[in-house]
Length: 376
Image (cartoon, rainbow, N blue to C red; front, side, top):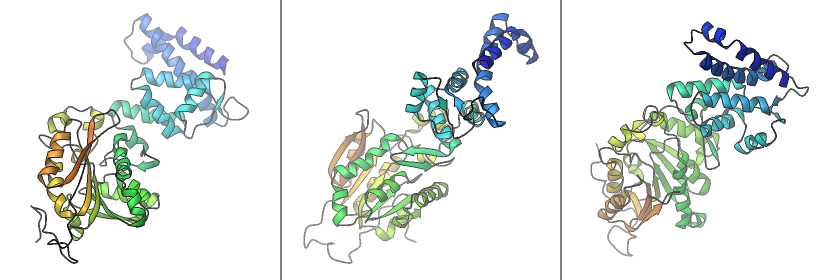
């Protein structure tokens, strides 16, 4: 293996100008030599994988040498992109976790077993660099909490900070309450279904409703629920915010939402990997980013059950505005909550509980529809 790497490097460097000319490259002698060394690293890194593909790897056990993998990784990073992204790809396309990769650096002589070929992983990396397509779409996976969610174009890739909405459910004592008093909950704008899956897992005796305006997103959420064996605990509804939940207005004990909240101007300036590929419907919140949050706030006091909770995610600079929206609709116990970096990112609020013998507290009473709802 080592002799093959040395031969590749010496041969390619010695023929640098000829190789560059053969590829039509306009390079100086120094540039051609540098190019050839990169090419040699790549060739050396590919040697064991070509052999493995053809039935031999240069090792009796058929595994790969860590030294070759690390050389291949260096070559890929010279092409562009971040080391964090490439290591993510090695983990989810190749099955090589970050901690395993660190051990290879300490002992580059140890064998490596990958789930996929380096050629296939390199092709995905090339597509990411050339088109800015998110790696999660290319691999079809987005890890979130303890799930590996299937994702694809037209579906928002779930972010780590959104996990904190589930932590808030626990912090507010709702999981403990649900253990003896099952809840009716909803996830507005479910996307991949990440929040719906987490709630269904956390509240196994409760029932939920996952809402999205996008048929593509709703289908993806349904597939993820099926894959995790949780589809029986959640019903899917297509439509805008509260409207598909009209039969449940006034009975929802808990509602979570990660709506589009990025101001249009900010969304237009996002990195291409987000702006050009993830659905604007799930990101662009209008001129001030509050369009969806306004609609959610307006419907909350009528759709929530008395004492029912609303928990929403918002942009890092919208906490006071979102608290004001909920307060204007009469919600109580309104609190801001920080994200992983300490910025205000979430707000919780509760519909006031009905006093005993107050109007509208009897069985069978139905709330009026939220303003703007279409009742036919």
